[in-house]
Image 1 (spheres, rainbow, N blue to C red):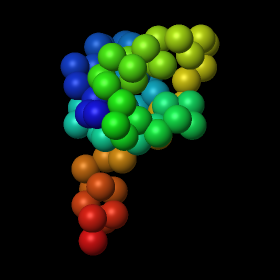
Image 2: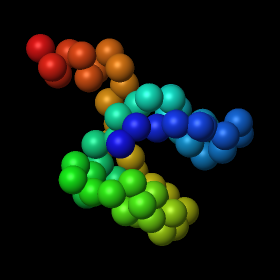
Image 3: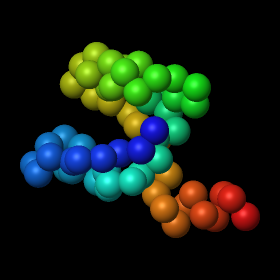
Length: 65
């Protein structure tokens, strides 16, 4: 699952998410094998705080090695 279309001034932008960051987990739940709708639902139902583990392009390349 990749981050796309970050709204200006949104919590995602303020949190430092970048387009094409790879989402690995949401609130400690791995997202591999989950549908896009499930991931979005977990984020939306997180309340006031949400912990999203992401890999940026450079980090993803490092782990591939």
